[in-house]
Image (cartoon, rainbow, N blue to C red; front, top):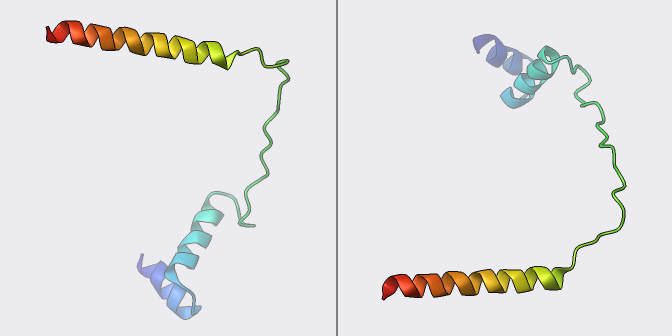
Length: 74
């Protein structure tokens, strides 16, 4: 740490910049840029979800849970 802080003072740079540069060099990224990463996409076809049925199912499940909770209170 002393070496890093003395280097920062000698070069009139911030400690953060010197540490970042040292980390980049240590990780093999002397240029400071990460290699571009691309995510491959896949076509799965048209969406076949019916959201109205999902909301109906959610409402039914919620009603069942409320009824179960009320039964436990009695």
